[in-house]
Image (cartoon, rainbow, N blue to C red; front, side, top):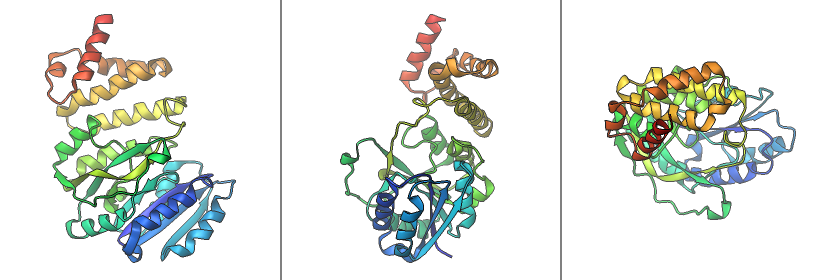
Length: 302
């Protein structure tokens, strides 16, 4: 059994996969024997599989499967089922890692054995801005409430499985649902709420390469439905004391996607947003001033 399982979901990734695997090899460093690489090729029609086969011999522990799910949630679960590592690490087929970062992560995880080691993702659109400088792992310990608060205010980290080191027991307890988007958001809050030993690494090691396929540039009814459903689920998971921060997420849906909501979705969102017109919301120390200002502006228009 290996210590760390790196799972890559690949679909028509011929333009980026070789660079990702080169980055992964450099990140693993001297911990190759403790790391297994699992690539699930989901219905690719380009040369993705050829690239996978060319790289397979460069990793001591390498597993690959070809599937036709056309569903990222199912692909992630397939990778987890094939894995044996104590920790699961998701790496997207167009993202990159700092050299030596996984080696350093393993050296931290072994003695501390946290439920989650969460890292700050380095969002990048211009690949020329990527640098190899890496200062190593020196994370801070967070209580569950501190981690939930940082997550809800989008401070330091968001609901991304990529770049995070998560104990496999959490994936066994909270399987990734078979949905085509927001599969991270569907499970991340529950993992966070039930974890008791959480560390956060501010110095990022994972380059999250942004593309044009985000929600804002490619809105579909399915994406909106998944966003609303996941926010409802998050509302059920987190304690009532986080209501004001959760309602900020509803306000984002209200301001950014109102015209795309169905009548039933609008009723759900309107009910939550109306709760923001209260002293409890405006007196909350955790709610950012920018949200209070936006809500006041919306109330004035109303």
